[in-house]
Amino acid sequence: MDLSVIILAAGHGKRMRSRLPKVLQPLAGRPLLQHVIDTARALQPASICVVYGHGGEEVRAAFADPDLDWTLQAEQLGTGHAVQQGLPGLDPDHLALILCGDTPLLRASTLTALLDAGGPDRLALLTADMDDPTGYGRVIRDAWGHVAKIVEERDATDDQRKVHEVNTGVMAAPVGLLNGWLGNLKADNAQGEYYLTDVVAMAVADGLTVAAVRAPVASETLGINDRAQLADAEAVFRARAATTLLEQGVTLADPARVDVRGELVCGQDVVIDVNVVIEGRVTLGDGVHLGPNNVVRDAVIGAGTNIHPNCVIEEAQVGERCEIGPFARMRPGVELAERAKLGNFVELKKSVVGPGSKVNHLTYVGDTIIGANVNVGAGTITCNYDGANKHRTVIGDGAFIGSGVELVAPVEIGAGATIGAGSTITKPAPDDKLTLERAKQVTIEGWQRPVKGPKKR
Ligand code: UD1
Ligand code: CA
Image (tube, rainbow, N blue to C red):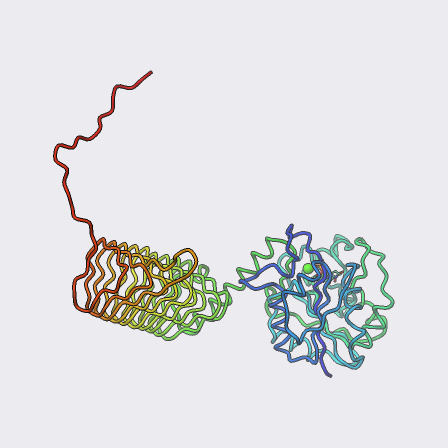
């Protein structure tokens, strides 16, 4: 059967206590709904319909992708009502897969198993065995072990609440059958809502098979209603990413203390210490060592490079065998050639550092091209901004910039030039010569330091 996916994302998510609609709350740096959409896409369905409502335009605006169909559920009258809004556009002979925007950890392989259990004359239901089933709908089975119905926690008897098999909110059924069942829903329950879950008892009454597929790991069916569940999901996500890295041969000092919120590609023998956060697309070459407390976003780090603790690296290209940090900050647009060194309290922006060059201490380098084997002394600042425009600094190969120098851009330092400490350089400095700008040192004879008088009361 052809597949059409409906994602329910109209609910308020009151229990999050947030201004942001629940499905936009970030998990591993991406909205909950994004995770669900990505998983749905992996199934290559004929269409994906997102039912939206609460936070309407804000939710739509967050997902501009043209492959999504949006259906407004103006009033949130329950999950059954929500599915009803999405059905009219769909081919009655398609298999509808219902996903919830607040269930972001499901794997495509689990959904494929569910779809395999579905068919033209049956309803396939994804269930899970939860250690703590609190808050979920319970799967009630008859004396023969067949699924009979789903009872929401708030409508359940004490005995029913003891059931650990829960409804994950995911089901697959033919569009035509769903349409018929949903037309007969009643809101005679504790929440006064039209429950999607009531279609299970309807399918049974029609003499159809309800095929329950248990999720292989309960944690992937975690539904997120509050901050505690969001934190749980983050931990599941983190553990998954860490397991993948370990399997690929990466050394992790503590798998519970590395967060991969994007795509991380690692070479051989990469070592990642604690409290590292990876965002966007990051590639670490063979033997890269990432020390503790590093944040790396959208960067390529060359083989053998050592990133010492507490660096922030964004949109950077780092060559092989570089040494970075501790406490270095690379803002977007930095390229380091091989064997370059950035030391502590050094900030770089939109700059190129040539092979073997060193910028070791307390320095700001912006809009600058540094050649090969340059030494930039402590406390050097490129004055690249005049309040309105940014200007460039160019430093030739083998130059030596003394400590505490201000390079007032636009300015060019020749190859092999030496700049005396403390200079404010505003004009080109020629190749191979010492250039310095410094007032003459004077000593004032007979000068006396002021002395404090007795304290007045
Ligand atoms: C639902 C299920 C419950 C299941 C649990 C799994 C029902 C009645 N209950 O409960 O059996 O164990 O999910 O996580 O289906 N939504 C709409 N429109 C609405 C109401 C909800 O789009 O009018 C969306 C929400 O945005 C959410 C999803 O449907 O993404 C589930 O709604 P929620 O209120 O979280 O249902 P649960 O109480 O968690
Ligand atoms: Ca939920």
